[in-house]
Image (tube, rainbow, N blue to C red):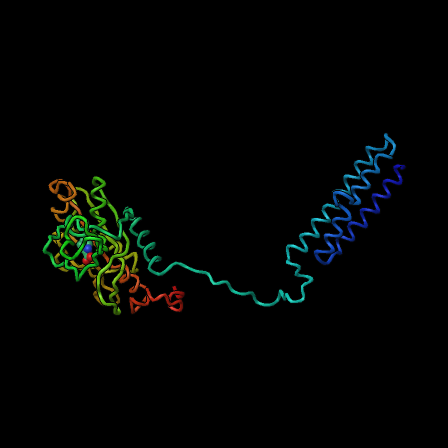
Amino acid sequence: MSLQNFLSALDSLKSEAISTLDSVKDADAFEAARVKYVGQKKGALRDIQKQMGSVAAEDRKSAGMRLNEVKQAIEAAVNDAQNRLGGGGGSDSDPTFDPTLPGVRPNIGHVHPITQTISHLTEIMGRMGFEAAEGPEVEDPWHNFVALNIPEDHPARDPLDNFYLATAQTGDERRNEEGSRLLRSQTSTVQIRVMENRQPPIRVISLGRVYRPDDPDATHFPMFHQMEGLLVDTHVTMANLKTVLRVFATNYLGGDVEIRFRPSFFPFTEPSVEVDFLWDGQWIEFGGAGMVDPNVFRAVGYDPEEVSGFAFGLGVERLCMRRHGIKDIRDLYSGDMRFLSQF
Ligand code: PHE
């Protein structure tokens, strides 16, 4: 075959292939065109490549170059056609698809308001150097009571006020024994766990669930969350405690929040206080606090002559509810999307 003939055969193959591929309307037509032009066995490109053997030797180089150009152009047309049909889901030929109609809005999930509050509190306290610590929700009496200076006959250990777990040989009479377990009633357990594992200085918070057998009403729920704080160092004072809580309250509730301490009692702090924040002209109790009791330091092997510290425990639901104007704690746990999706 002369070079001239070979080149003009290439040209007509190129224009025929491209115009066919450009106008295919569905997957079947595309597949037929693909096989016809670039099929491995009997494709037209393949055929014409074989004919190159009959072109005079000195012309083969230019014949080859042109063949490559044509091959690339046809392959590009194959890709274009494939994208056009595949990418749009056949949209331009599908009469049931109307791109001008509004789409179906996907239902996007989001983080529960209490979880959002926990992240927010963690961030505020993190800026003051408090690191987050965690402890188990199923606790032993040592961490929930004994190490916190809560003696065996203390009313806080009453089975009516705690969720003791029934194990094979654990009855009421055994609840104070080594092997008994309960759902923790306070996050103060984490104070003990942290101090047992580290040396001062310590500056931690712990945010998590606690459990108490309360009947649910607008302000009570048998499961709720607390933010525990613990700072242990040398020469720690109540002024330090009050400052940290004031800075915290100002950050979380906004404005220049006033804070008030009322004398109280907790077995693990001495002195102990109830913490109130002035919110919308009203004093509201957010939790308890105090200076870590020397007996607690002794229980974890610290020397109370050397170190001092403060601890506090605030109600997370209470903070979240105040900030967002939520009136009933049960709304948080009802799973009702009409309520939850507002946050
Ligand atoms: N654990 C106490 C409670 O649940 C709160 C508290 C924590 C008080 C730390 C003092 C210090 O009521």
